[in-house]
Length: 316
Image (cartoon, rainbow, N blue to C red):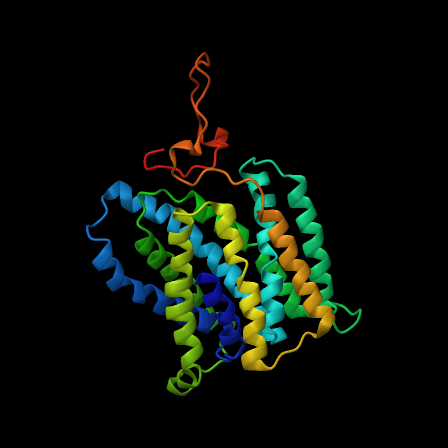
């Protein structure tokens, strides 16, 4: 469901002419507000001081990364106007997830990961140069830059403690994105008039991206990653690229040509190559961590020495 929602969101973003920061600010504020009544119903009880610290510790950085990635992505879509192409370039971030995990979480980078990256890079080249060998469009480079930020957001979500309530987490995360966007919008997009007329003209993209893509899609990602092994979740989420191309064909009459679609297939193949393999234990399961040997002496653990993939718990 999340992959489908995100894929068609590329079409909605491509049809908006409101301005990237104004659009993102309004959509994420709507997404944040849409979760408030749901959180009040399903996540009753106010967090204590430690819970509030944990909530802000994880939701604000996640919001800042989401702001950076989504802003770069939307700037690229605004310049390129190809939702299918942007969707597949963005899907390249799934290849980068294991690379980032190796760099920042000290997880082993396997041959499968490197092979998937090479295949995806070949597909990215074919998509970007589907009309002949020419320099990539500025929009393609911005979307690609955003693809290098998305893995950071995914790794943050993977480390959020189980004690942090997901709906509240997402609401604060969206509020962070909306606040930063609306603060910068008057400075960087002062030439764009935001009034009742422009809001009516962009009503359906704002509502779709605010309520469906943000409120449902990103919340589905945060909740789904808690109950699903990360590799399997990544395979499912990478299907957004397929829905982006389908949406571009159905609603915007886009055609990348056979070279472009062959490149899309290679990107998707690279993503699948990276993610398919022996699955580790599900997050939070008793087998998620390997117990030490019986004769191994206990050792103190500092935050900088942590190499396991389990989330931080309150007080750590």
